[in-house]
Length: 259
Length: 298
Image (tube, rainbow over all chains, first blue to last red; front, side, top):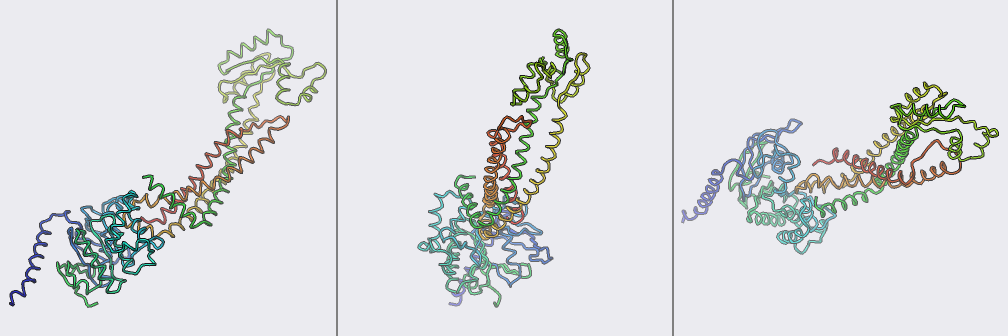
């Protein structure tokens, strides 16, 4: 009986090893996100990131954890090219974001969906319009917009609240709209910067199930979080950053901090 | 740019103007004042250009023949002048014909008639010489004087030069005022656009995040600036054309002899309207560029 109890642990180890081997078999530039010896030093001299090396593959779900001020935000910002690395190489979908010309950055961003703690919804637009806005901004023809917006709003469970303004929606619902907006243009991966930070536990779980479902459909999710319960329960890859350095990168990691 | 997107940019520009309606109105007002001054400059410049061309057309050396020169001698002098390479045309104008022409151009026939004492015509017989190159009129004048039988030769070029020189100074003063005001107007438009950018910073942030192209974000601001500039041009064009028409009528009415030949309103109107609209749009777009470059972080 003792050995039977160990089977699930053994299986998870095998699955983890297979995934790891699969990642190791890939060559440079094949990954969705790659960072090689990345440094981010701000003009005031603060070294937010120091020699980061990381690879994230298609379909992965990755948590970025670490204490406040550890460099998580800088790490995230490098991924959607809000910041440029001071040193090192950041490859997003095979594109070196440091070398990409300014006018081409929007085209890099079109393949990335971003979700924030404060939702960043436009208050004068309805849920539908907020999502459609993202399609309009990338000049999608109007006839393609309506069915796609309806589809993603239904996917996030807001099919019946399309006309509601953000002020008429709960925090959880607003975050769903924000996720719908992030996925409406079919990005290859989603970056979520503390998406549950402003939500109660029940809504937080709803959002996590939603992100999990999106991930299950093949979209990579990279999520920075302080939510210990979620990380420890969902058991996905965990990258821990402290003082600008990756101190832990585990396939089915734990949160690892007390807060 | 797609038609759908173009429509969206115009809607957004309109929204920006309505959101800061008072500021937009103030910017339009400044543009209007600027273009009013610029319009005066343009009218001046167009008319100087017109006048120069007209004067060049009329520029001629009037070579006065000695009183009592026999007809054969007059023809001999005429032929001699016709052979001069500087001469385009040479015409003999007998004193009677000269008096008739003077009557026509002065309008006041009685005044001219009064100049005659009895049957005596005070005018000399003249040969009117049209130069090939208007710039060499003085040279032609000097050469004509050398011919025996010609007592005087005058092109009136000095008056033209003085007139053009004076106009040039006035034109430059207006131009400097206009330019200074244009910069002021552009800054005011830039300030209006800045307010729109600040009001829309959340939208701009979202647009950037979802991958809107830089031009997609910028276009509405340029359209807004151009719209303010062009709208600001409507009022000065109207005012200037009405005033010009009134001035033109005053100058050309009555029998008074006029040295100043003004450009007709019909031909000036289109030049003035197009130039002022273009100028308004340039000021507006320049104002937008100032703001977009400074405040719109893409």
